[in-house]
Image (cartoon, rainbow, N blue to C red):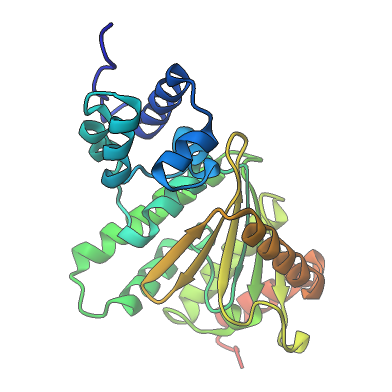
Length: 279
């Protein structure tokens, strides 16, 4: 019997590679858990590879070819599925976002990428790397704007963001940039495209003071949580860890302002920035 054909990089290679993995696994009679044991990973990890929410790394491609006897198919094709416009530590997160049915996130210091304007994204990326060429900065901004297109759908994915008040008051790119950025957040909230709540300074100490988090849910794969630090990040699929961080997010929601009060604060600050009256 002929083996699978190599993937066309222009035709959703991640999804095709996942479909081929599922087919090869089922052909050998292995469950996701059983295949995961052979690769020293969890069954949910295999499920995420099959769903296309995780990028297949070369070391896993090699082991899959050996276990599933696929004659080097996954080694040859994992490169096509790995092409990305994003920094290495964020590649898998951006790709998972595109498949998510729900995204819940908390950001303590900046407006999150999916809610940014080009000018705000440009200021953030310039701050990240003050010596980068302008062309590189524009490539990064373009990649971020590509991610934002997933909000073009009127209802999917569900995007629920808790913004720390510090993110609204940290002047990034100047007052005009901040005014535009906050007006965009307010517009998305008013159109019921996203749920936005502000965690005010008055909330005091809270459960996520150590950093940002992003929870992602999928229709056909286990949920993921993403932790982000300075120039690094980590995806986690361990069910107890995901459940614990979902509880953390729920506590943040409980401590945050209501949607109505959050919108009022965001719009008031946007007006202050626009009229250069921000305290």
